[in-house]
Every structure is written in structure tokens, then in C-alpha cells.
Length: 187
Image (cartoon, rainbow, N blue to C red; front, side, top):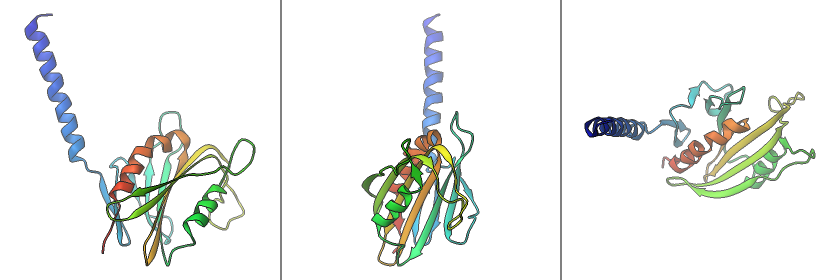
């Protein structure tokens, strides 16, 4: 291969790489409004019409390679909150069981949004939550994961719950953390 061919090859590769970076930089995601709280979600996450009036927002995340179904992010906003952060984490933990059929402990971290404090929650195991709130019928889905975020304001509690197959949710983790960092409460 001649030096000029190598130079052209490298130049074309560099330009293509820069165009890709530029396109990613310009794709700042989609801004979603949930009550007085806004956040940015990755553009690949598909915004859907919420399935219930309790949901402020709902997004679908396509399955990762090896998973058969998508993950779902739902956002709830409850005036005066909906119990303590700890009671909500406990409720989410009880929606899972581990290999010994025990409730797994959540990994809990404090994070910062743009102007809000956020409690980030992560749980994995067999998903056994009711199919719909209060229903007797229960899910029974192995290798599931939940990423949650709780934002408490003086007037409203915001609850973000991303659930789905383990690989899909693990692949969405970086986007979820970016979503947390972008959270902004309109004052």
C-alpha cells in the first residue's frame, strides 16, 4: 500500500470518526417533562403514552442482544410524596427474590441532579411484583433488574422505575445515570 493510499485511508477514517462524534454531541437526548421536574433521556428510548393516569412519563428501551423483551421506564409524581425513601426502597426490594427465594438488598447511592438530590436504587433477581398494583396475579421473570431514582421536593415525590431483562437494563445504566444528572426542578 502506498503512502498516499494510507494517508487517504487515515484521513477518511478520521473524518468519518469526527462526523460520528459530532452527530453524538448534537444528539443531546430528548427532554421530558414530568410535572415540575424535567430530565433528558437517550434518544433511542421511545417515549410512549402512559398506560395509567398515575404515570407522568413512560419510555420503552429496546432489548439488548440476548434479551427477548424491552425494558420500561415509568415516572410517577405524588403530591406530598408517597412514603419515605426507605419505605419505597423496601417495597421495590420485595418485588424481587434471589436464588434462595429471599428478598435481595438494593444497592443505594446518593446522586446529584442539576438542582435536586436523587436517591439511586439498583436491584436484581427474579421479578415477582404484582402484574398491576394491587392485583393477585404476579410476574415471574428471572434475570430481571430495576434501576430506580427517587427525588423528594417540598411538595412532590418523584419516582423513576426502570425495569426489564438484566442485560437490557444493565446496558441502559449509563443512560439512566445521565438522566439522573440532567434532572432539573422548575422553580
